[in-house]
Amino acid sequence: MLADFALGGALRRRLGGTRPLPTLSLTLDLTGSPGAGARTLAEVGEVAVADGVGTAAGVIRSGNHVLGHCGAAFAVPSSGSQAELPWDRPDPPEHRSGGLGELTAAERALVTTARRAAETGRSWCDQVISEATADEHGTSVLMPTEVMTNRAGAVQGGVLFAAAARCGAPRDGTRARLVSGTMRFLAGTSAAQPVVLEPAVEHTTRRTVFTQVRLLQDGHVRAVAGLVHRR
Image (cartoon, rainbow, N blue to C red; front, top):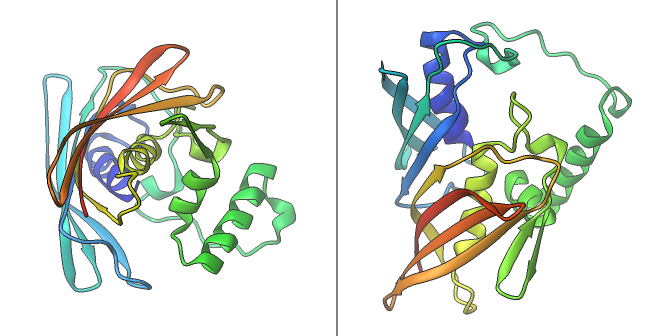
């Protein structure tokens, strides 16, 4: 999710904060996982824009260590406008502390989930995906919520990537981590319907598992992920 926000944000700084940028593909290549309590950053370098396509690439850092790299391709429509979000602005609005009563029901639920994550040692993102996903008969079903949507009202690409990475992890009881993944976004994913995730193991070695995960909604494929996990 962090990579998706950073890569899209870098393009919007060049093209304008209200420019629609549908994600075409998102790639992560990682050598490790963020350390507990460490600040994790996605630092984006140069971007490229031509012929209706924008690309961006960057580095993932945790503390003083480079964890890997990220990259994405976005469609750049010639027209259209979407709402600018607070983090798109060079000078974000002044922080204002308030009570939970000022939040929507979905935002209050997210705060509760984040608190549960702190108790279990999980990241709040992992907790959100876990609580919204049910596993049954070799597949997973993600029930999207309001907090998972992007500015266009569809399920955010980083959420779909995270759900696929969770679904595509080895299910034989061994611990494994994601080292590489690429998701292709074929169509927008509505937040009003469940998303079915179908994993298919393509190849395994003693330590490495190659998996493809298809994400379907209403019988149609919305996205496909190719993942590599290491035990």
